[in-house]
Amino acid sequence: MPSHLTHHPSEPPHPGAAGAHSAGMDGLLVLAVVVLALYFIGVVRRLRSGAAWSAFRSASFPFGMGLVLAALAPPLATLGHTDLRMHMVQHLMLGMLGPVGIVLGAPVTLALSQLPAPTARRVVRVLHSRPARLVAHPVTALALNIGGMAGLYLTPLFARMLHDPALHLAVHVHFLAAGCVFSWAIAGTDPGPARPRDSQRIAVLFGAIAAHATLAKAMFAYGFPRGTPFDIEAMQDAAKIMYYGGDLSELLLAIALFASLHAKRGQRVAKSPVRVAAIGRA
Amino acid sequence: MDAEKRSAWMGALIGIGMMAAVDEIVFHQVLGWHHFYDRSTLAVGLLFDGLLHASELIAIVAGFFGLLALRKRGELDLAWAWAGFFLGLGGFQVLDGVVIHKVLRLHQIRYGVPLLPYDLAWNLAGLVLMGVGLALLMRARKQRGGGRAFAPHPSS
Image (cartoon, rainbow over the protein chains, first blue to last red):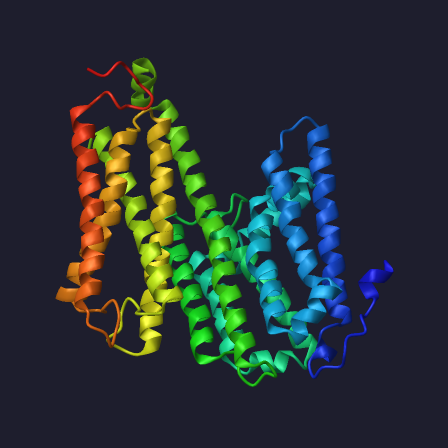
């Protein structure tokens, strides 16, 4: 393993610094690097075989994965433990912006096209299983995503996480996974358990924006997370970062969702007589 | 609905969303004068702000993609879309100023100060924007067919 992955920066001692690093966090980091490498190999193999793969997807996945890697790497991971603002930046990269990039990179589509047929079929069977269908339902995804945030910031969970490496790791894994499932449910193009209806996607995105904005402002107004060594100023700064950063990723999701609806409508319009008439008129 | 009206409605959607965003950013966040719903606790006020926020963000994105869809079909009429945009901006202000502030009394612009100058400024600004929208609408109507973005011909 490269030395920078295991290097523990000598930060000044802090009540929470003990939980910042663990073998689990390093493992997660290595896993993310491996997945990114596999994606590159997949794209190269696919292009060599003559099948197309869009430049947008090829750029989107490394962008998202890069944000996740930066959030998990020691500099930010350690700072995120001692500084609430940095924690929030880390949280946005890991749980909101990163997953949007990952999902728009369509990794499952790529994997299914490169895996041997029997393995690909097994993956599809898992994707279509009942538990997967339940987790990937837009409403469940919303609850896991925003509910997870509320559970972390409004309860003593956050204070406990600062001293418990295992819990710390679990929270990070949850943020990343819930972020990906939610982004997929709203704007994903990868095959999944059941394609959510368009109206359902818009409604759930609406709910998510409202819930996220309300949660961030409530944290600002009432001073959360409580029971932590952070002062009210740090809490308010963190809440602001959460509000505006969340907005940015939700705006990206909204654009991705409406762009996909637009493309779908374009395919229908291309065949309709209206289009023929419009072309004739021009 | 014909292409002109659809263009105007998509412009209006963007206008409504943008003015809601201006209202929310300037008065709710920067100045902190009021929330959308001030007749209950602060928490309820924040929740209604969140709902307003989600509405405006989706309205703006949906409006832009609506315009894109019209353009793809060669039906986008920019003159009508601009008219709709200004009507949306001003319409939101007047609707907010009259129905939300005065009829439903969900919130006031500011508390602890004489309200009249604030109410007048907000509603008059809205009326001016609506006036601009109406003028653009009349002009678009006069040039009917001439302002089509993708089927241009010399206007009469």
